[in-house]
Every structure is written in structure tokens, then in C-alpha cells.
Image (cartoon, rainbow, N blue to C red; front, top):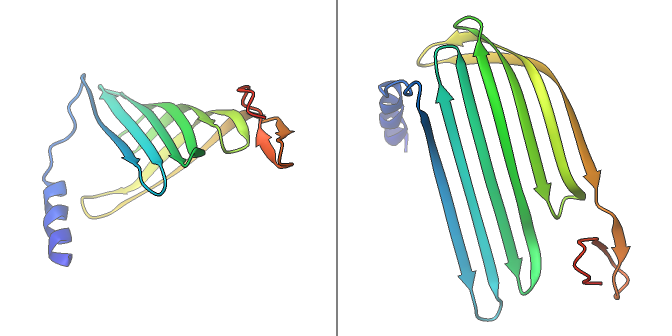
Length: 163
């Protein structure tokens, strides 16, 4: 394992810088289904993209997750985010970020946040990186309204009439 880490660390150090003035990104997705003693379904997807020009770096993220086992939903969420960085110097940049989260199982109908701040890189070498950031932000969300189901438990009010 140490040999593999040493080999990959050398490959990362030799990698070219990211391209400028063009969107780059990566994505992933997975579907899973199983039938037998229990019926299981799962899906997830993610997309991460970035755009770099002279002073600006823009990043975008989208992610989704769903899971179900024997008709019981165990995961149902998606989120999206955007961050823009502006380089003031080679070691200092300012940033602004937006994020939205919709998770059917976390007690909120949605959560949204906005943030701004500064980040400073104290050490930037191939072997060592040390930076710190400070910022302010605001997050708001809409709590789920809970109701009673027939068995006396609580459920999120999904508006589907499954009471």
C-alpha cells in the first residue's frame, strides 16, 4: 500500500494544471435493484464542474441519492451548490457560495445557505499545503410539519395522502 501511495503521489505532483477558459468536470451515477427476500432499490448521481479564467474560479455541484427497502424509503435527497472565487493575490482569494438542500428525511422541507469570505494559503508546496478561511453566512430552512399516521407514529407531511 505504501508503494502505491508513493507512486500516486508522484503522479499527482506531475499532473498538469487545470485548463483555463473552459468548463471541466466529472460525474458519476449508480442504479441498484435487488429482488428476493427483500426488494431493494437505490440510486445516486453526482456532477462536479469547474471553470477557471485569469482571476475567477467557478465551481458547480449537483448530487442526488435515493434508497428504498421493502417499500420503506431510507434516503431521498438532492442538493445543488455554486461557489465563485476571486483571486486577490496568488495566496489570497475571496469567495461567495450558494447551496440548496432538499432532503425528505432530515426534518426540513429544504435548507438554503449563502456565504462570503476570505481564504489565505500560508504554505503552498507540492508536499505541504496549509490554508485558512474565514467568512459569514446565512442559512434558512423550512421545517417539516409532522402529522399522525394510523399506527400512532409520526411521519413527514409529504402531501401524498399516505396517512
